[in-house]
Length: 117
Image (tube, rainbow, N blue to C red; front, side, top):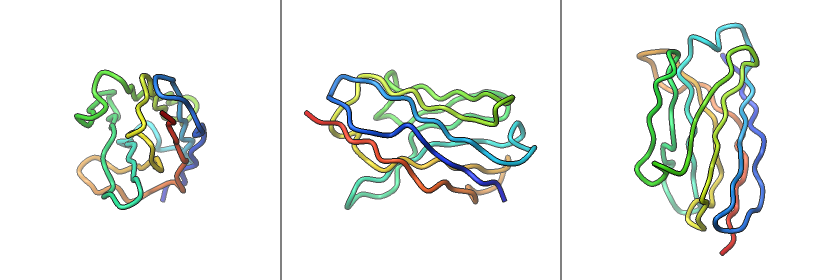
């Protein structure tokens, strides 16, 4: 089981930027597929972005062109750079990890992002 700890959330005005970080425990980080998800009150959990062990990235349609996922294997950390934030980006953001071909079985506790209009 991988332990994940998110940080970097906060309150920002619309049009602003935030960078979320997710630190992972263990020595297998470089082999994992990492993802960022978000959930707003009353909504289902939504995939924001993923990055494979090889660095291939994918994004949800609502964040394409505004958010960027990256990772630093030396620091066991995955990042989510969020630009041009909108009020509808307000949510609890979660980091998650899975092995290739598996399900997302490791989750962080979440970090709140609030975008004011």
